[in-house]
Image 1 (cartoon, helix red, strand yellow):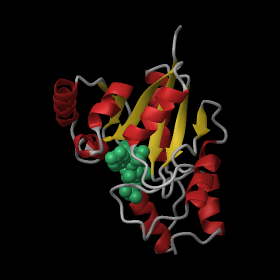
Image 2 (cartoon, rainbow, N blue to C red; image 1 turned 180 degrees about the vertical axis):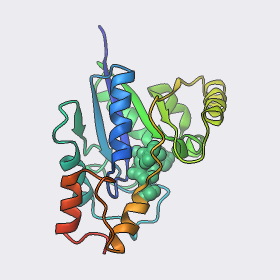
Image 3 (spheres, rainbow, N blue to C red; image 1 turned 45 degrees about the vertical axis):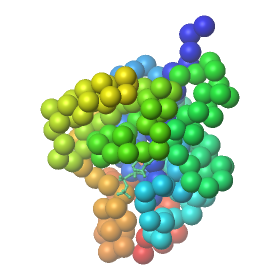
Image 4 (cartoon, rainbow, N blue to C red; image 1 turned 135 degrees about the vertical axis):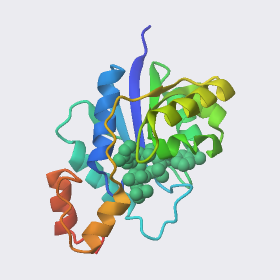
Length: 202
Ligand SMILES: Nc1ncnc2c1ncn2[C@@H]1O[C@H](COP(=O)(O)OP(=O)(O)OP(=O)(O)O)[C@@H](O)[C@H]1O
Ligand SMILES: O=C(O)c1ccc[n+]([C@@H]2O[C@H](COP(=O)([O-])O)[C@@H](O)[C@H]2O)c1
């Protein structure tokens, strides 16, 4: 039986921005995925939690941002679990529950260069194919070198996404909102409205 191809765009999404959305859409098209799950993290293992908005608020913004794309879906799979949610555990549980699905985990360059220090990278590479996007200063050459290293060390399947380098971050958006600057074009119009209406990041 042919397995369903499911992309997972995991992130803190504080807030979700157009970089995340373009990554999801690129992965969907380039790898003919059936859908992409946008999966906000609960307790990001490596981020300090004091400036991170509540789970429900981050999830609501994700829902608003993707609502017009029938191939995108909000997944609260990690938010619904207790404690720190590691990607290896998420993939283990998803694979057990859905044997008819195969997973494509989508990351930006910063995550790619750090992933061998995540919990149990061997399991991540065994249970998913990794799709990595350029970001910031990392060149295609550096990305391809890292991909080759991961492929060799972990017998992984890692591919480079053909996405444009969109050098924006949630940090920058939070800063702009805090300083009363416009965040339109960084996020979808409905997310911009939501942030403004709820006075977030001020
Ligand atoms: N502009 C971007 N280009 C490519 N990948 C990105 C971009 N923004 C985020 N990502 C990737 O999306 C995933 C989730 O990112 P996250 O929600 O932490 O956003 P962020 O912009 O990095 O946030 P922050 O600035 O708060 O650290 C990570 O794998 C990250 O590398
Ligand atoms: O499992 C880990 O050890 C791990 C460490 C860092 C990040 N992650 C995952 O990577 C994705 C992007 O995370 P972040 O913090 O950059 O938004 C998100 O799904 C996180 O759960 C996972």
